[in-house]
Image (tube, rainbow, N blue to C red; front, side, top):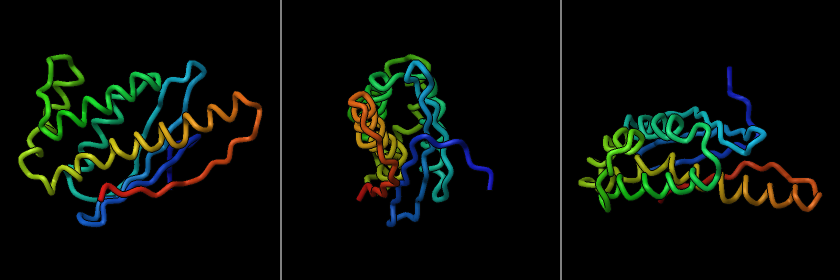
Length: 144
């Protein structure tokens, strides 16, 4: 199988719908994200994952976390897109807010990325700065 390089990898599952994705992430020298995914499941989850990977490419961790929150506000119907290019793309996810059971499908990639950033990258980056050896681990999460 031809998988992307993986400095940080996290798997996310939504057993209710059968969605399953694995995020593959590397950081460049400026600590900017390069994210790819592999997965299977419903079209909402796959489309959301694809949009997410495109939207976060080259972002630093702070901007990625802000975008994760923006995306959540859009797919849950809390806010409408404000008109920049990324938010206009994410507007396609706003329709799932009318179908609560489908919000989890759109949320899975973003929740998995949030987990990857907070539990993997930030914690391991802090370890590296303290000159200890980070331990890579695969964490399975669920949006249930």
